[in-house]
Image (cartoon, rainbow, N blue to C red; front, side, top):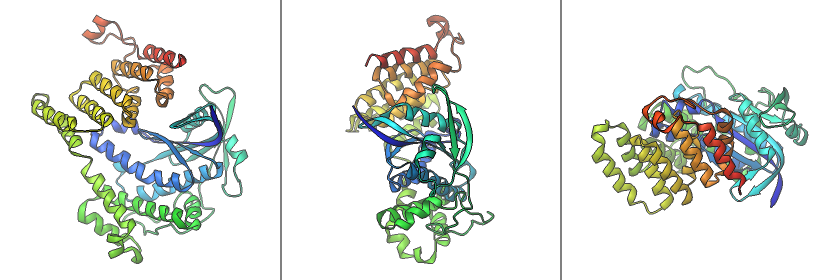
Length: 417
């Protein structure tokens, strides 16, 4: 068993579950792509290793607690840059939590109480903030990162109280943004909340790290503007907001410009032909779905990657409203190595329908899906809507649904390992 003393960072998007219920699948995928485009380069630039991304959440490890916290403040300043040009419906407000301690390390995951504590602290963090534990406070370089105590908290499943700190917002180090932008029309001038404390550190380092951050800065502005407009209007607006040195041929031909154009293409067109076929099924009236389902299935069956094929079949079953069949397809996809299917099974543990949650819980237990263990534990403790009720004929025939009991049974399977 390999262990290491690491800083653990958890992030997630405020109100993501509620937003998902109001979005089409394509809108949701676009939101997650934007989220990944903005955050992932920053984790890498500060030396972080992205262990996994589950829906709207990241789990990242760092060897340095100081770098872990600086990545958090850099994320918040980068999202500020994105949000000021994006419409309210497209804005991203993220919570960041950091803990440090000895964890068990595997190829694609980390385990141990430090991970659980980081997850619980993330649950109490406020959107736009960077919260960290006393363990981080004691081990980080306090000369590089200001701190302020929030209080001592009792966290679910953690003995004793945990002292929690936050990074106070600026001004304490006013540096120019990596790619300086004037305030959009109608938006009062203001500085980033953490005064570019993290972004300036990486920019000062230069080399590949500086290039990563410069590209991330362009993406933040570009994605924010793209969410507000499209096509030529967006590119025109982007050019007008960039400094002169970035205009013209450099925007069109440079690596930064290429990243912007590529990001626009991905966001605007929303996936491949299979995804668009699935969306047509979802949007059609039930009586008109037959030919559309056959068209989508034909496209999916041509997919050579077995994991992606089963995942897409699961998406198709969801579009048809056949959630039980979708869970079965996602289970097959996980067995074939699909991380997207892992994420979706985890999401379904929070579904509004009891029988969907129960079926997902049994699948997670059968697969021994460690990435979903935290959500499974929450379901086993709290249950969900409809537990114990006999609200329809199926419940009266089969008995009341109990997703809490299903989650407890799934956790028992983990203990057998």
